[in-house]
Structures are given as C-alpha cells and as structure tokens.
Amino acid sequence: LLLLLDGSLKMSSTSAAGHEAILSYVHPGQWFGELALLDGLSRSRDVRSVGASEILVVEPEAFNELMKDASFARHVTELLAARTRMLLGLVEDFAMRSARARPARRIVLLAYDDDTRTTQARKEVFVSHDALASMLGMTRQTLAHQLKLLAGVGAIAQGYSRILITSMVALMAE
Image: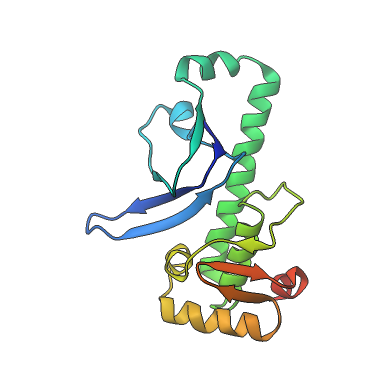
C-alpha cells in the first residue's frame, strides 16, 4: 500500500501494441496499490512519477496486521467503495454521455482528485490535452473542440498543460 506524500504520479495501462492509456493522476494524500494486497494478484496498472515524488510504503506484512484493526479495515473499504463509484461513473460516461459532457465530467473529477468524498475542488487542473484525450478515449482534435465549447460558456480557461476552472457551476451544468 502506498501513500503519495509529495509530487504527482501518472497511472496508466499500456496495450500490447505499446499504446498508453492514462487512467488518472495521483496527488499528495492519495493512497494506491491496495488491490494487489487484497487479492494477491499482480499490479494491473503502471504508475510513473511526474517529476520528483515522495512515497510512503506500507509493506504487505504491516498491511495485513493493520487490516486486523476494524477502523483501518473500514477506511480501506471506504476507499474501495469511493473508487468503485468513480469507476462506475466513468463507465457510465462512455456508455451514456455526449462528447461534450465527458470532458466536463472528467475535469470535475480531476479537480476533486477522483475522490467523490472530498468537498474541496482545485481551481486548476494540470493535465495536457494529450493526457486528457487519452483518459477520455477520444482524439486530441475532438477534445480540443469540446474544450473550446466549454471555454465559450465560461466554464474553463485553457493554458499550457493546465485547465483553469472559471465556473464550477457552469462546468457541472455541462
């Protein structure tokens, strides 16, 4: 089990053909790596540091001992429940939301660090168009068009590898 203390991490998967799909970013204060400890299978995603990072590692033996504590086990369960809800929402996005709604929703999730339980959103999301397009399974050109529309309604402003949320209300309405 790992806790990012400082820096930023990119979580992705790579196809057999070498195509990388960026799934999310990990920010300070976020835990990750719990699935391999819980089910005993190998890690299913790649995690790479974006610049310098500091990570706290909870070794498997320590994790197993901590899981005997009901309070700790409850926190792990809540973490998994939050991630499951977020992932089901992403599946729903692909199946039911328009090309315009998908980037808006993903930007909102990134602003909340993919944590549906947090109440404090960041005003700036540091993500390139390539990375966001990869997360959404759309071309960079389609994404650029949708971001321009979101900027047109006053929801966002774009910068180099960042998106400034100018109106969370307008963004969520999209």
